[in-house]
Length: 175
Image 1 (cartoon, helix red, strand yellow):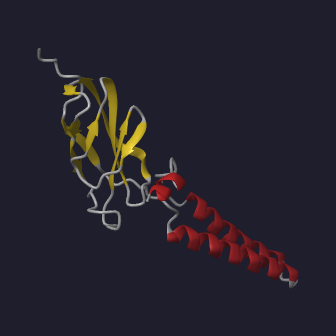
Image 2 (cartoon, rainbow, N blue to C red):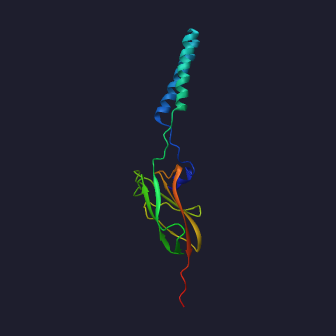
Image 3 (cartoon, rainbow, N blue to C red):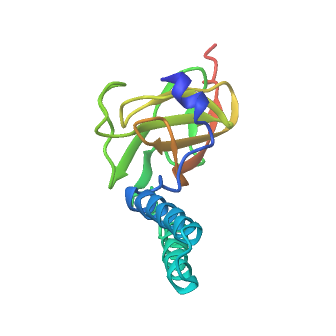
């Protein structure tokens, strides 16, 4: 699965070409080929030009046909911890995430939902199949971003993500 992430990194979103677009393109090219045959067969100019116009219109329609956006209406929210919150450094911090409009798959082989990518300071830390991932932070202020990606590790376009800032501190030493 990491290979899938690497090979498609940054390439997500926008939606794939729909089958109808391919049908229109192939039909347009086929009709243009038919027009070329009609011209070479000494058909009247009106016949082969008419056929060519239909072919060109089909081919152009394949380009102009709207492609549905890949991203369904998904909203991701971090319930806890709150952005700006003080947390204990060097200790796992659970991040409770709510996903609306999407489903988290239960494993790498479950293709019925997406999963999360958790970044700390723009570095990928984990790709959990749970709505409660955790991070362990060294002392300091850190940017934590949680992104919901599709079943192939491909990011939506625009990204479905949320970012919080956490201030990790060591607990006070007891004498």
